[in-house]
Amino acid sequence: MSEMPPTSDPLHGRRVRVLLADDHATVRYGLKLLIDAEPDMTVVAEAGDGSEAVRKALETKPDVVVLDISMPGMNGLVAMRALKEAQPATRVITLTRHTEDAYLHELLRAGASGYVLKRSAPTELLHAIRGVAAGGQYLDSTLTSRVTAGFIARPGGGAGKQPSALTDREAQVLRLIAAGYGNKEIGAQLTLSAKTVDAHKTNAMRKLDLRGRIEIVKYAVLQGWLDQT
Image (cartoon, rainbow, N blue to C red):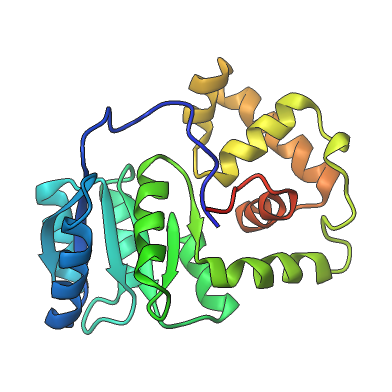
C-alpha cells in the first residue's frame, strides 16, 4: 500500500537522499547495494545504532531515514522520536520483523511515514522510499488487508460509513492527513488557514466516528485513497 499521489514534486527531480540505520553491517551493506542501484535514490550516510542515526541525520539532512527498530542502546522508536523533534521534515521508514498491530500503531503515532517488514521483497522498501519521499505514507503490502480488516471489525467504527457523508473539502483534508501532511501544509495546498483545516478534520472525524490519525489512515485504506502499487 503506498501513498496518495502528491500534488507537486518536493524533490524537484533530484535523487532521494537516504540514511540507513541498522546495527548489522551486512544488512546495511545489502540495503546500500539495493538502493544505490536505483537511478533515483542514493545512500548518503549509515548508522549502527539510534544515537548515531540521529546525529548523522542532523548532519546530512537526508530526505528519508530507513530505521531498524531493534537496535542496541537507543532503539529505533526512541531515535525516531528524537529525530522528528529535532528535524520534523525528515521522513522515516521503520524496518522491522514485528508484525503486531501494537508496533504499527505506536510507530505511526511517533511519526513514522513508512512501515516495512524485513521479510518482505526488496522492492517493498524501494516502493516505500519513493512513496514517503514524495510526501505520502506507506504500509507494507502484507499488512494492508489486516489493517483494513481490523478497522472494519471495530464496533461503532468507520465501517459502513459512506464517503458521501463528507463534504468535498472534508474528504480532501482527510486524504492529505492520511498521506502524512500537517495542518499548515494542508492549508497551504488548499488555501485555507490551519484553524479551518482543523475544523474540517474535526467535523470529518465526528461524522465517521474516527478517533485519531491512525484511524484516519485506516479509513483511507478502506476507501482506496492510498493506492496500491
